[in-house]
Length: 254
Image 1 (tube, helix red, strand yellow):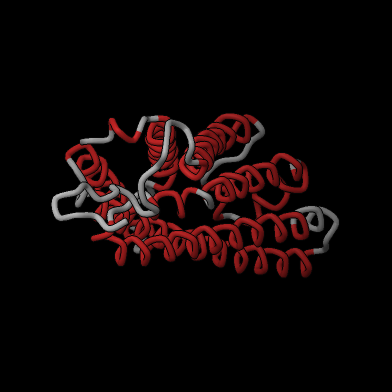
Image 2 (cartoon, helix red, strand yellow):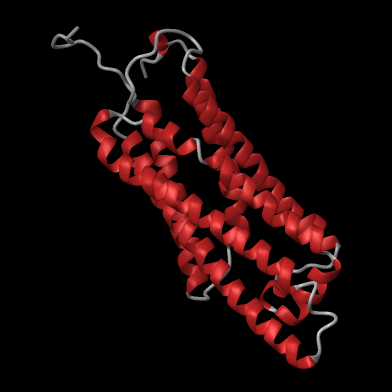
């Protein structure tokens, strides 16, 4: 059946929905975003509360001679940090196609580019987290029993893997920021409530850009605050998607 001139077109990609709570993708994406937001919060608390009580400090992350002995004594706790972070990224994977589907047809091209960037960013982040976990589990336990020559080599390897993981994480943040920017711009082509949401995503992507740029040039390090901000943002996105999944299509007029 063709739409006559003046008929309302579906708001989101994928067409109209037949009834309340019949679309599983927004529910899946909403649950994934909520879980990811909660895990990001857990990551922040785990780092600055639990690991700090075990003696880990932010400065130690850039000092392998202090970090490696600490990892040797607290290997399980340290690896737990990266497994939680890895889980948070895995939970984000279904969010990308969900947000892409929730964009208007007019914004489909930029949203598609953003979705590709978002998936790539999460995959890069997963590789970075796995790299850090693998290198820590290999280098940390070997440090206490090593002689001075071997310790020097372990320090060099730790610095190498640490730098690699840092660059992967920053590249991941840039790609995720592009995903949020593209999605926000596409949402701003929708009715009023979606334009406000799109503006919030654009602001978040700008914040990510500032944090990454400042850290890359050594100006200041706001990455811990970014983790807290993105946690809140993903919880907010998850709430939006779950609300959209359970609202009757006939009521989606604004």
